[in-house]
Image (cartoon, rainbow, N blue to C red; front, side, top):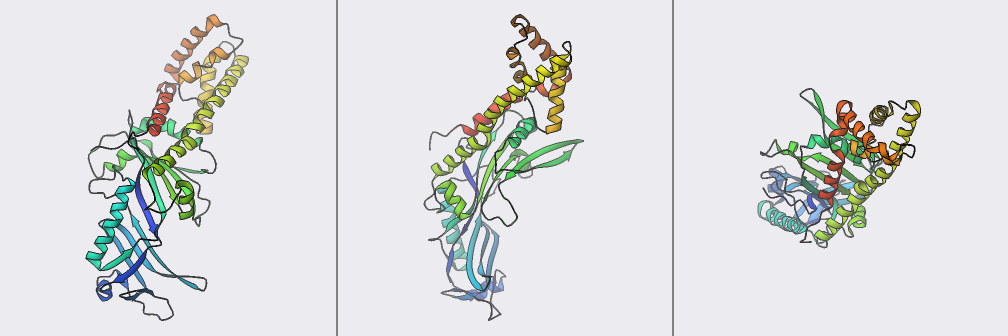
Length: 369
């Protein structure tokens, strides 16, 4: 299966402000259980050229995840609504997602299917995007589980307002595996405009459906609310949306959420490591090197976030210690490297290289856009 790893694509989408203009046989739809005729004259009906109804709901029918239409009362005012939930067709999986053009075609196909199968005419002229999921799926160099500390750092560094975070953990074979990392700008359960970030093990999800090697990671951005979508993408009209807008948004968010916070952390991290080294040299000049490694690991446990991704980031700070003669620097670095191999194995997994790998793969661009 060929997966476009250099382009942001669309998975799920919700459209609202749709309009059902005609239904050829309302009684038939009522008989098959997808339509409810209005039995209460006090409840406003949804009128079409073919009659009226209280509610219409078509679920999980080919390309339709959910088509819902009817009336709802807000305060003293009745409103009509018509929403369409649709997503990438999962004949084998949703490892491959859609371009904007693919989605525009899918909506046209849905209109045709509704007319042919249900006798429902759906007008999308005034449709707006109410919710959209944009993602990139990349093949990592190693299994997803090796990137836990890197992803933990990414989540720790997320800027405001991506404040609420969750790790979805699974216990397997006596160990805890983190397969999903999640953050949102959603303030309350009633929030109607917000964004979400989700980073997860796509291979683990797909293994229930198809045979796939480990190492597939998906980074998913969800935008909820038509006004929020218009602000972020420049439009909430599917007919106006382009692949360039989708990719510009994804690129901007990767810089905002991952790259810039990590570069800032790198500068702060050097100062923090230098401070720890200086403190440990004052405590015990003979054991300050092992003391530094121990303190760095202790702080990682306390903060639940790495102070250093690997030993190379620690060794790079040694030359900045002004009270250490230059002629001893290489020997100190070699000794600390040896000590890390013996008692700080977590610092010997090349995690800083894995971070750069993720950044490179999420920011590389397709030549076709």
